[in-house]
Image 1: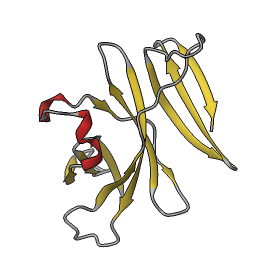
Image 2: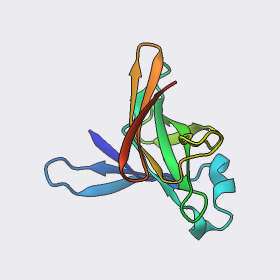
Image 3: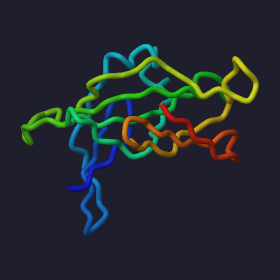
Image 4: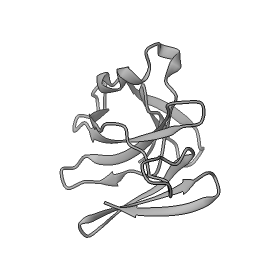
Length: 143
């Protein structure tokens, strides 16, 4: 089975038919923790990120990007929980959300203005994050 996240808020999950490429919506759920990011329904400016990483709990870890200013991007971690009941009206829910964060620039105390996380990977006890800076440089950080 192949699924994709079409939007972060509301969390819109699509099932992809791998033979035809057609997508069908299987879930649309709002996440209360993200309501502060969109005071009006049409104002949320969130974007998806890298492929999700499985956690020992069974949840999936992801990152998303939010445009918080004209060209200022921030990120947040989130976890998704997949329902064990296939007939559930919300087969996938956002089970947790981190505070907003950004990646520091070469100038101490400042964030890179343009940044986009492209990859998440768990390597032993570390989370490896790869991201682009200013649409022209690849960077990596380990947590």
